[in-house]
Image (cartoon, rainbow, N blue to C red):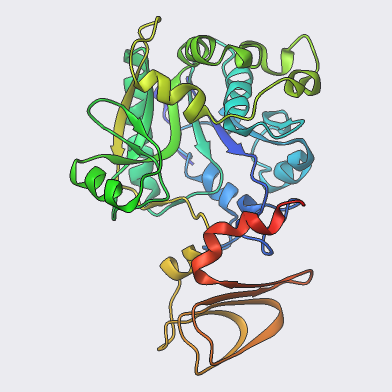
Length: 343
């Protein structure tokens, strides 16, 4: 394992607060998506840490997760110091998670901090590391939050976009806008942010002051985390900080800078990833485990417990685990959260 002295002042924070809904029943609240082994023998969160080899030292990698998942995360990532895995007492979206990460990882002589989701796919780690190093170098020079923008491979409606020239963010578009964004050269927003600790703190203080205590003190806050979190809003870091910073007019002169990246990125947002990355039979079915498929096409069949037999059906997602069974129309897999609504 090779580390570069130039990156010794770079701290990485993995955001791992997933709830397990989008890949249910393979994932559950007790073992959400980041613990799934989808593309090999490593979990998504293990891959997220491994691809930082040569960019950040293990002692400089932190994880912000749910308090209930701290022990599981520490077992999954034994190469990290146990104290570097910190738990939130309750879910408050990525706004609070990033602020807590700044407070925990931002100690010392104003290190550069990078925030990375725990459940994404990176097909080319070498290009990813090159993009991160470029972003770190830019963050050292400018009063800016640097984001990695992904070269779009199609006009996606499920991702936000960022203009690489102006740093302006745009919400998830409809199909017409998505095509216009791609034509105009906008990039996908991958939710990766890099800046000096002081820049993150200034941005939070200006645009989301309710999170400032977390960003300033982290686990050293004068009150318990549970007390602090009770009064915090559920708000994403994109909405609370990145979007207003990208619009300009910051009192502190802050801005957003963009480093384009083309390293095989995917947010692995749903079972659609099986269609994208796994082989199909002659009828377009993706089959894992004991699947008996007759006169059926375009299905995703994942049998990790009871065997599955399909006859004369199309475009379904069918999954078995020891605890549950999922049968869903493939066109609805982006709406998995409906299964968990109360009332």
